[in-house]
Length: 328
Image (cartoon, rainbow, N blue to C red; front, side, top):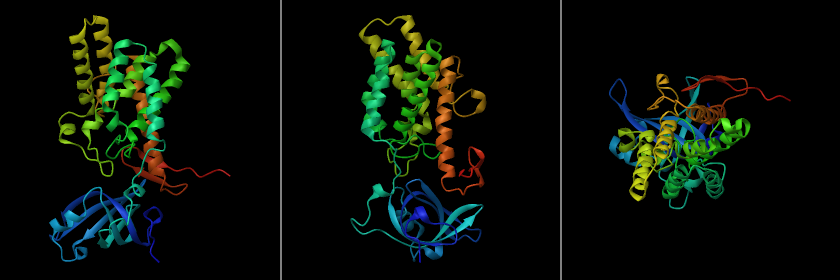
């Protein structure tokens, strides 16, 4: 009997059920026969699939690509195997669901907290920003962009790549930061940290598509990247404020310090992770470390969810990861 839920399929079983199409790429075998690499998913689970040309049903590659489009749900029949230590599936048959046969929300992974509660908590952190110009810039940018910010993914693949992942990641950083600020008191500037962490990934609402079923990088994201995009947003706010009133050199300096924290939140330039400036303040180094903590926790949690206890797997971007056995 075939497994009908993608979350339950394991190597050696057949699958017959619905899944979300999250990535499609056409290619050819050494003999020149066309085939598709298809990534399917349900909630947190992702499975790489092959659709060989003998499963095309007489259709051309273009006709197949019009069916296997990112963000759609299809009914698939296939066989699950293991390849290079990972689950893989060969698609034998497929069909488009009938009207009202599936609810796409059943297949999309979302943040574990509600949008309303996360928004309220983030606003609470913004209210604690005591440097007036940073409070104004942060609160205005959040208010203007929250419609998309609160539902957006935080990444295409790496971490928090689910609906409202950007808001959940941001809130997680703010919570971690609060503990650090409580521990170290005046050594860490809470206002600068809260402003930087709230804004650090806001450029992702432009960098990546707003389709959280199968997000992709936009042409604007490929031009600049989220760090430069959000710093442009901040600089425009500074210009608007200067058009309203005189802005002191101290205010300009703290805004540019904020931009340095954001520019360096991927760490030193030498690590090649995408920062556009070196971190040169305590807050800049802390922002990078806090961001890295939350990203790595999410990546490792996601990687180990399908692993067996006691198993070691090589995970892209992390290296070898071990899933400990539960203690009695």
